[in-house]
Image (cartoon, rainbow, N blue to C red; front, side):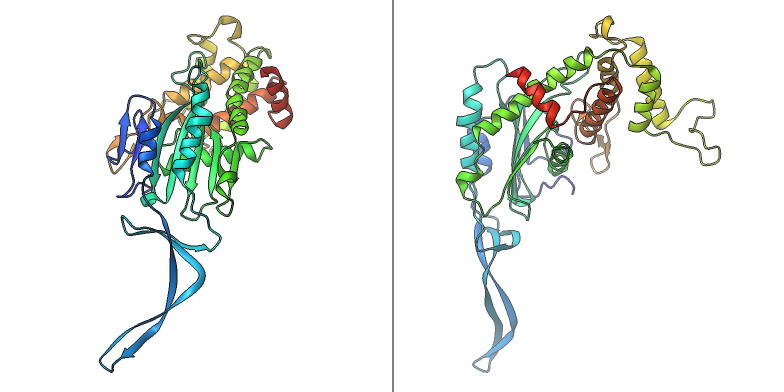
Length: 375
């Protein structure tokens, strides 16, 4: 059960979900703060743990287990459903109120920008693994690449409260729409990918911290929101960086989508009629789309790395969603086909294109330069 949605879990999502779980309600609007907080209205308690040393005889008639409490060691339990969420936590473990965090987000992050052209909204929220994980996903910026079939550069801020053995309260900035544990994991992986490059896409506060330290600082949130504007500037810079040769484009595609090599010939596999297959076919589709021109792309940008990147996102967007064998349905192409591994793939593609057209690597130095331009 990769989606992590158990019998006790519930959630609300703006739009559709690939898993179709009935516990997750789908709506056609942004989420309201009070309905998000309603999802997290259940108690989690620290339960003392004990070990059994066998049975002891009582009045020479019957025996009962002989238990000894383990000092300073607890389990996390959910009394209303009688579920154990974490088998072992220490005495210093702090039970943090997710609803307090949601209230802070509403008053300090959402409300100040509610009247702007690009308001911050909550798009999904829910619980996983019987309530051991709680998450809230906010849209903090959107940027439409001309000619693409979806808001490819939608930027999300996801707050994770992980009680099952995770690292604590985790905030990640990414392009992945979270509707289950699969996509939540992809969001964290995407953030780690950028974080390991020296960027700040992830903030973690441990459960030994007090609540005041865990609450998201409004300045940090503003910095994350500013990143959406930086991505728009990044696209604009790429469109003005000059043309990209076809040979350079093919090298990028072979890096992103390696050829399926025939072990006997050592050449890319072809059909009986000599047509390309698999990744080689995808490479040809992207090159053809790029060379033919795309709706919404001005002709003066047709040969640029910007137009080439747009062709990559277009082809990825038109692929068929993955089959869910248990449901007999495919994932929604409208958004799910553009999240997770594809989001990471697009970030890699963008970096390779920037390198080929002579732009500096997107790291903490170029990030600072872009940030100064959007001040």
